Length: 158
Image 1 (tube, helix red, strand yellow):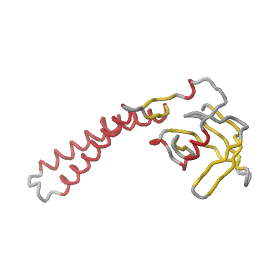
Image 2 (spheres, rainbow, N blue to C red):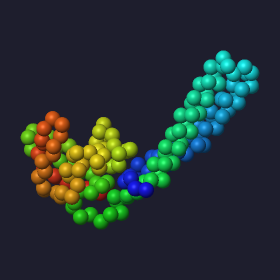
Image 3 (cartoon, rainbow, N blue to C red):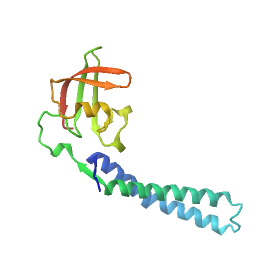
Image 4 (cartoon, rainbow, N blue to C red):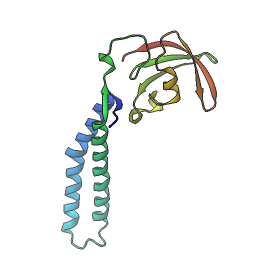
């Protein structure tokens, strides 16, 4: 089975969610189902139907998280010696040479990617163009709307 790269922070967030689901949400939904069962006729019991549906979602998410953690290759960037090269887990600051705007991205696994907080997937076109480059390199990145030329200002192990 192929391992999927994941940052230590991403793995910890999944572990926290898994703990919440198994120790809080699962027991809560079991109580709700028990209470609905106590009401008798289940055919027209909306509380029971809703609780069973929610239980399915919770159990599905628990299984999904367990599978992701099982397939994860957890990489703690803080433990990797700094080489100045862009690798999985680094935070990179770029200068757009066309408009002089700076952007900062952290290169993370697919499940952790969230452009709203400047986390991009290692498999994204931008990250794939950056991997292996180093500070002060100029890189031409192909995006759907064309090409952007960036200068790499810094590579940090945060």
